[in-house]
Image (tube, rainbow, N blue to C red; front, side, top):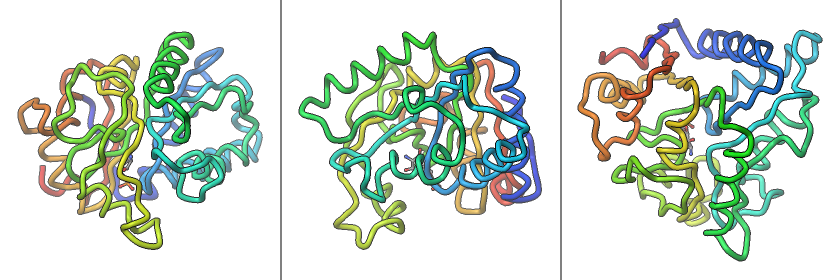
Amino acid sequence: MEIIKVKDYQQMSEKACQLLKDKIQEREQPVIGLATGSTPEGLYQCLIEKYKRNELSFKDVVTFNLDEYVGLEKDDPNSYAYYMNEKLFKHIDISKEHAHLPGGVTTDLEIECQDYEKLIRDAKHVDVQLLGLGVNGHIGFNEPGTAFTSRTHVVNLDETTRQANARFFNSIDEVPTKAITMGIDTIMESKEILLLVSGESKSEAVARLLQGKVSEDFPASILQEHNRVTILADEAALSKV
Ligand code: GLP
């Protein structure tokens, strides 16, 4: 794993933006895995600015998001589909057909999971997967205890995860109890992984990711076994390493 230490959130976002821009421009049809949450917001803002300055085009970019809440429609302000549209897609020249998220509202969630896997396979896998880190070590919505062999599946969200994400909702009762997420094995098949971490609240999780043993109790620990992982973290996030 390569660790890049930066001063703060802004530097993390700018560095991630530069790295991703280079990856996009290196390939003819780049396939990029995207994440949600607060962490990548600065990165998305920076990518939009590069697009507006004509330094970057997303015309040939294909994207796959990690996860989506079950039960939230695409136009629900708390859905990840809405988040992606507001924070990135509607501001850039990406084709709607190229920007994929699992569907959280469907008659058959199992089929939705299988279809999503197939889409990723048909795209010849993800070139660079962006990841955030949950305080409990989750990646995507793969909670502690998820099998390392898992593919895209439906998860029951941990109470701690629901609480951590409650800040985006009116109350904890509105936070969905289930989500669809790419599995750990799906994520591990990405050719490269870029994990972003910022802030003191993630410092224990980062220390465990880097120094703990590889265990399904701490999903992010599997990244130790991927041969191309870059961890881009600020000083506060690395304060316990
Ligand atoms: C969320 C998302 C993850 C995200 C993580 C950290 O629940 N499902 O994909 O990486 O938790 O979120 P944040 O960046 O807001 O700390």
